[in-house]
Figure: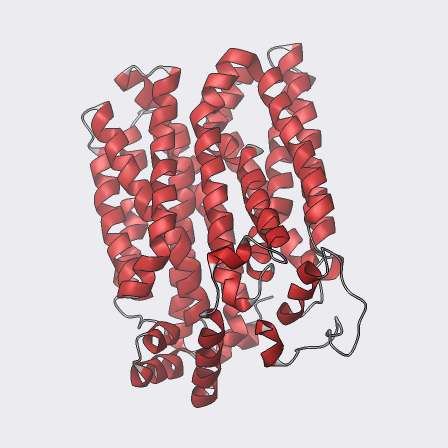
Length: 477
């Protein structure tokens, strides 16, 4: 948890990084949700069919997949700061171009480019935050990024509601440029990360950057530690992830990334107004404020999850979240089976969407990057996280592309019946493959995979779960 005394000890630059992290998260969240309200009016202006609505929504997600692929190499080539500065400028331009689009073709093209910048930022921003933040507040800032994403979603729904009476979808999309401009101004003052400077052999600049971000740290010792870690990471190869003992870990992170999205969370974010409309809700308040209230509840859920994850463990949190999603799918199937909302069905329909989102945020949403960061030894960690993110985005493309078509073809019962089956499969998958890493040193987690997906009995050659470290040399044996 972020404590007041830690904030007081942090440098001013460290707090600027905190603000930067929050702004990036808000941009990402706003981009996820602003299309939800705008689509109600874009559909009328451009006379969109169901397929056309899906194309407008999916264009961003397709761009995100490509952005996620090029984000890492781009950040390594030109630096974290320059990459984020370039992205914020491009995002500003594309947000404005989307707002002034004169045709469906132009809108789809611009939203693809917008997705490209978002996909790169999803990869670069957490790295930028983790490598720039003072040690005493690093974990809190990474949590802040997740929380800020939900805040961005809430802001998008509220903006959509405020502009719904006028139907001004152009302003809904264009307002995304404001936080992008703000982050550009902030980034000008922030140095690149000490880790990137060391990657480029620029130790003096790395020393200055680290001393500015965390004045109380032993700079030379920390730089030596970073260089040692970087040397250990150079041995990581994709082929190692595809053979024993780490094939099981690869199947787990790729499968987890896929289930996170294929179970349907972004169909709720992108299409909440249309889902509420299909259940019989009417009026701008019901279609836009109710989704915002759902996101408020999800914000509380992620905070609760993050406060419990190191006490209850990863598996109980994740399995509970998926079980809540299963219950939500059952409720939504009942609502659609009984017909239009009214009376008790109104509350039941809202509760179904609420539980779906809360269950996701409590489980999948809170733990995705925990498992991405814990499942592999250091030399494979970046590759593993990239594999999970790519799998996640591919599933996101599938869901955003077909959801409306499936909803109109099979109806709500069939659509949420499919999500019910997928959530049940996710529950079995997590139960069978997810390791419980609570209290385990990062260096020890590799022994779980090397022992066939079981924790070995403590011996002189394997670390005790309560031990803070194991000898550095064992990581590459």
